[in-house]
Image (tube, rainbow, N blue to C red; front, side, top):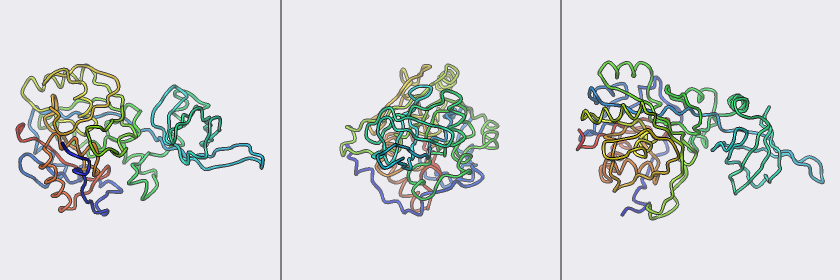
Length: 352
């Protein structure tokens, strides 16, 4: 059994990417197909075979970070406080659960104005605040799109504010179904030219949806990782995606999710070894060493945070010791880490 500290490593701060490289496929790619190969994403078709199926997550990130002012009548007159709220879960057409700060300045009944939007605090549990807006449905969505900022990960947001460029950079070319508050970052490396090159080699693709939540950045707080409770996220595998995956496996070809979100979803929808069914709902699957993969035969993924559940996931796929070798190689080679960083293609040896 591994403990949380087993997944710690030292990452030089200079390797945390604050902006992506351009064009997108210019990012470096560390391939592990039994041998570690230093390459770049543009050469991805060279490491895959005709008949392989890439599974992309088509969730769309909403500009979920809102900055506003709380107004409250006091005995000394109107009281004003600056509030930042990150929307994390839609509860109703006019209602979102949020992470708001400073939460100590909020109480039930408070009004917060976010530009043209006004929200009322209707519930509060620590830093989690339920906001009921004065708009609903598509009208609310349009105003959030207008006034919100991209919810950059904490390790980027601590270094710089989100700006207009992030609205393009932090969105994949597949993004079509709004609902995520974090990007499926492995897919950020793809553009139309790379997709054309993959198709020309006979490499297929399909799309699923997993709305990535803010919980993806929550730290593991227990030393015994088996006691960790995963956050829940909503996803869907359509009948068309399930058919593409089943047909690929039936032909003896590989299903390779692009990103840990797509991997967690297809493993949640697995009905048996090499078999998946159409599926929709919430998943809190926690993949760690000891897990038996039913669908995924490889993974394309960025380099993850120390002590993170994502690092545990890749360790389940490739083996704990091998992942330590991969990460040592990446750090020595000055690969760029995290959401805007470089990527890896992980192909377990028994599937190569």
